[in-house]
Amino acid sequence: MNKRWRNAGLYALLVVVVVFLATALLDRQPQSTASWRYSQFIDRVETGQVEKVNISADRSRALVTTSDGQRVAVNLPADPELLNILQTNGVDISVSPQAEDNVWARVLSTLLIPFLLLVVLFFVLRRAQNGPGSQAMNFGKSRARVQMEPQTQVTFGDVAGIEQAKLELAEVVDFLKNADRFTAVGAKIPKGVLLVGPPGTGKTLLARAVAGEAGVPFFSISGSEFVEMFVGVGASRVRDLFEQAKANAPCIVFIDEIDAVGRQRGAGLGGGNDEREQTLNQLLTEMDGFEGNTGIIIIAATNRPDVLDAALLRPGRFDRQVVVDRPDYTGRLEILNVHARGKTLSKDVDLEKIARRTPGFTGADLANLLNEAAILAARRNLTEISMDEVNDAIDRVLAGPEKKDRVMSEKRKSLVAYHEAGHALVGALMPDYDPVQKISIIPRGRAGGLTWFTPSEDRMDSGLYSRSYLQNQMAVALGGRIAEELVFGEEEVTTGASNDLQQVARVARQMVTRFGMSDRLGPVALGRSQGGMFLGRDIMAERDFSEETAAAIDDEVRNLVDQAYRRAKSVLTENRAVLDKLAEMLIERETVDAEELQELLATNDVRVASIA
Image 1: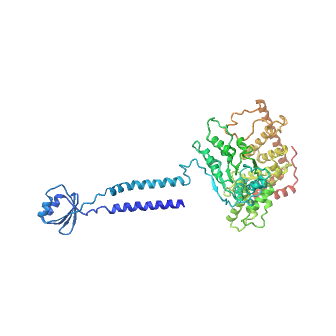
Image 2: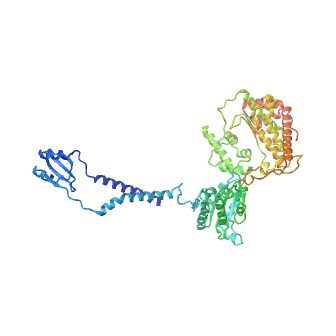
């Protein structure tokens, strides 16, 4: 309503300015089409060519009417004989009346334009102050989006695959709706809930569902919106946010990506005062300070809980930490059922099979998967999404789109086929390893070909990997390079295995330094964690082992890699005929799925790799 009146005022002001300028222009004395010099005027008067003269009130100008009716303007000097000359020659003389000297009119006309300019400037500044993207005078105001009656269109029914997290937050909603039931037995409403988990697992979706279910005012803001280039702005915004929240209690405050403002204090390299630390201190005070904030529940989300300040995580601020992890098979199936709503699926689409093929996928990944399948179906002018589109979408999400315009020579096609066949055959014949899902020599992304394995659900959920599994993983990664050596010779080995070699070196070093799987060094963890450096906290950290131990680590890494190399080479050498047949199938068909590979292995005499 205020915006509409403000716009109406600006339009009215514009109309006033236009009318004033038009009036000023119309009031100007019209200019004559012709003019005479004064001497020319006197000559015409004396020759009887002038009939009438109208002299202005200030005697400076005259409008002359000639005998033939022409009107001519003349500028008059201070000539005392002019009237005598006109009278002598019988010219009709008239004088324009003196205009009344209105002082107020002149003052108003002088001040009108500056006044109008000031009014326009005032309205422009008001619009700039209240408009989006320009907060010239509101730096200290909170930028939180407020929903007094949340209408996020999301409820707990739209959240699937994270039942434990949903249960925790459903209890928070119950606290808000039925507080008396809990206070009757002495229970206190939790002040804060921290949602922790990898990106795409549904942390923000859960917060939106809480807003939709609770029916109380909902404030949402990102952690990065607190911090500005001006000192003190972040703390001011925190105060303003909680003042608004207290005025609307009970309510929910959701802070997304809280690690942007809640990082551990004292970890910077400069040592000076930090605007972010001031903002964090104010946030800590508001969450559990002297005054308290009864009726305000804070929900925050982060995927970096390891960098948060310890004071932020203590009970009384964030009473609960809810882990929102990647969904298991059951969770993925529920998520697929949710995102399949509104999509036309053909009868051959098996959501259970899709759920089994996508271990490690988050809710966002699964939503993107079905959307990509729908886009592929529309691109192919289909009215339904079939399993082919879903399979292509899985490949697209995992490895990127097909490069159909890339033409491969026969030699390169053969080399890529043997490389991928080496990976697949070693993986298929390794005991206790992930089953092969698909082999393809169709270029995708930056890869010339790909071999997909289906990871074990138990291993991914528990995060526990045995020594034999890691040794198998290194052997499978080396299988592609070894197949190139066996078929084309050591001189023709390409750089296509560079990523495989990096993976092998990383796994071998972790086995020695982190997992204690070295026979020579024993069960000991060496060196600091391989995680990312955080704000200089680890920049001065020294390694906790000697040069001799470092040399021993290198030797052990080399031994593990050599063992994996010998195992993979033994498998491919003993099953060379199967390797050739699999490569020929890839050259002919470009793609071999799990069923075709199993049929090939069943119809040939293959030798399984020995246990490491």
